[in-house]
Length: 172
Image (cartoon, rainbow, N blue to C red; front, side, top):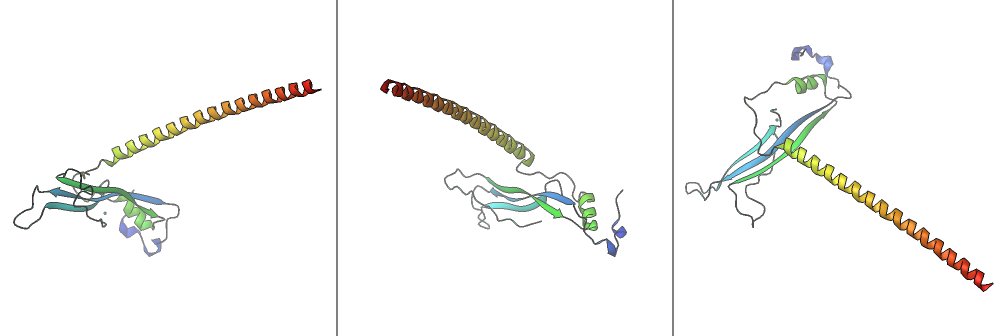
């Protein structure tokens, strides 16, 4: 089922056309406030920077967020800044495709993300669906109002024509 790396010879370097492999990642940082400045080193936070696979798989760079952006907000003991992204491999080589699709877990245990991205995605989809529904309802209401206005205009035009015709008959 799985090929060994030795099965990829020098002639296997061509691209696998039409194949796209997506590897989700989470990157960010966590800064935990000590509650006060430490006397021994003057530090106020313990922080970690990470790039980790969304489902246990990579390492990139991320600007550190050590303090809250909003200075008026109550200081929290923990500042979290993390983002979901994906690495996309378009038309990978046969060897790269094999590596990307058959890699085994390199660490023990599951990763714990500060943000539950599955739930966030679901909430975002629900908000988008609700917005689409509201927009559709508003469009339907506006179409109905437009139709009623056009009917009213046509009715008024007909009355004006009738009055003009009656006025023409009286003048003759």
